[in-house]
Image (tube, rainbow, N blue to C red; front, side, top):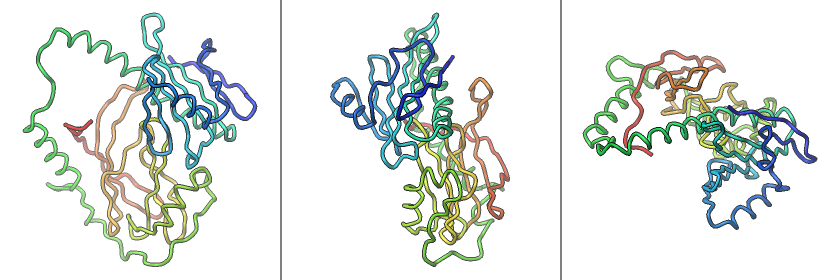
Length: 300
């Protein structure tokens, strides 16, 4: 269970787990948090999109700190796995430096990830106990990895009667200058740096006039959207995120998007893994088909 309170703390809004004052964030800024955490030799660090993620095995505690390019900057998220009544629980604190509605969106963006981390820790604990008595390895063989890759490629490429990029051609590819970013949407205002940089690159990647922009939305979370180089307008739909499918393949000469992702029930139990085929109609990505696809083997 993840229980949270929303409290005002001067420059920001802080969310922290009820009854866990020791989990409150005391750093005044992302810069101060990074300086203090980096001084601890046991903490490891990596960058995921527009977040700097630090891991303290002593908790274990996961710190997510925004970079200046992040739409939620300046913000800090602290998450800790704790044992409560024989179960694993996630305690989360958020120190947020943007508007209250955007802070709410930030906290919500981590909820699904929190539950998956908690469940993973639960499963890993149980698995470690059962595997202790087993000698057999579950690692896939080279032949299994090869067959898995063949099946996935056949689905994504539209072999055997599936949907193909070439079946949805566009009339022409835009060759003109990139327009300025249209700032009329909330996402454009929050992720102006990323979207403007994608337009500046001027690379047509999809449906004759669209480029792709991406931004971090939490640990192991990456959202992507399409922006017209001709008009500067982003499509209203994004792919990726905590639970959405991620782009697998697109083409400048095609209006078809092939994506991949899992679906979950209300308890965050996975119900299936699929390839999704969308076509751009006007300014909307319309789902044409959903096909079960095996997850990739042999990847970390």
